[in-house]
Image (cartoon, rainbow, N blue to C red; front, side, top):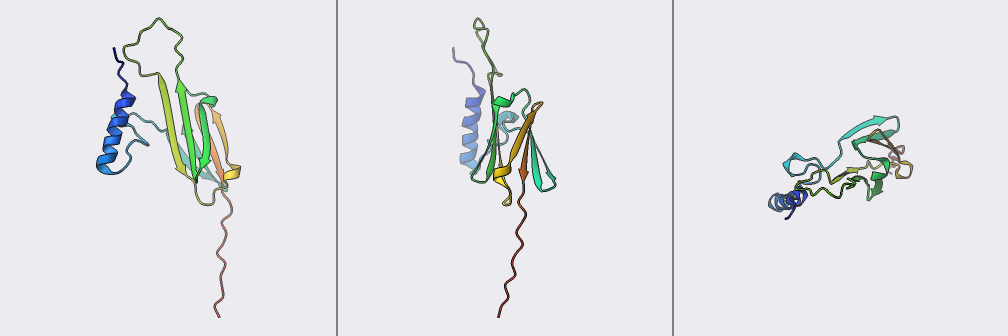
Length: 141
């Protein structure tokens, strides 16, 4: 008996939609309205931008954040432990939870000073901003 895998069907449908409409529908919201990106709040503090992302039920070691090509990439993956080997599931939705979000960093982001804190299922990423360079006026003779 083959177990129904909704993720497999969602990926196939998203690829079809991408082919038909020429854009990626699967990054933020999956098919059937299942969110695959953590919710995001963004606000500005003095000389920094702060991103708060929700990872309910996740532990700190199941979430990672890194910068690549000017993008802040945040991922979380949670696998449920299968301690009861005697159960033969017909249908199971809680097997794997994967969340991913890509955020374009502002040009004046100080990537070397980015910090992150995980508390109560919320990841708080603080992106310090470099002082913007003022344009230098050139005298024309």
